[in-house]
Image (tube, rainbow, N blue to C red; front, side, top):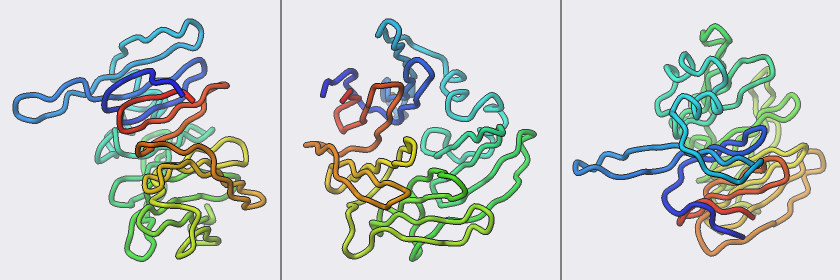
Length: 223
C-alpha cells in the first residue's frame, strides 16, 4: 500500500484512464472549507488540478448542471449514472431520486431500515442494494417495486458500520468504518470474504482499470 496524497480526501471517482478526487485544500479563518479537485492520469502517473465542473461531470454525467440542483450537498450525495443517461441519487437524509435526462424527477422515495437511513447504494441487474451503517446490513430492493427482497447481516453480521460500496462485476466491496476492513460479497452466491484490513478508518474503496484505491483518515492510498 502506498500513500499518493496526504490530507482530507472526500471522494474518489474512477475515470476511463485515471481517477479524480475531491479534497480539503484549506480552512478559512471563519472555519469554512475550501474544496479542490485533482486528477491522476494512468498514462503518465501525473497529478493535475482540475476545475469543479470536471469533477461534477465525472460524478453526475453530462447533465451535471441540472442534476446538482437536486442535491443537498454535491460532495456527500451518492450518485449512479445509468446507461440511459438517467441519474440515481441518494441524499444524506435517505431520500432517493431518479432523475431523467431532462432533469425531471421520475421517482422519489426513502430508503430506511429501522428508522435509519442508507449510507450508499449500487445497482446490480434489476436490484438496488443499499448498506445501512447503523444496522450492519446490506438490503436488496426490487427496482420495479422498491420493496425489500433480501437482507445480509444483522445481529451476527460480517459488516461493522458499512459506509460505502463499490461494484465490480458480480462482486460488491464494502468499506467497514468500524472494523477498518474491506468486505467483499458475491451478489450471485452471497459468499462473504474479508479482504484488506487497515490501521485507520477506511471510508471509500474503488477500482479503476487494474488499480485499487482507498481513502483512509490520513489521505488517499493505492493498494
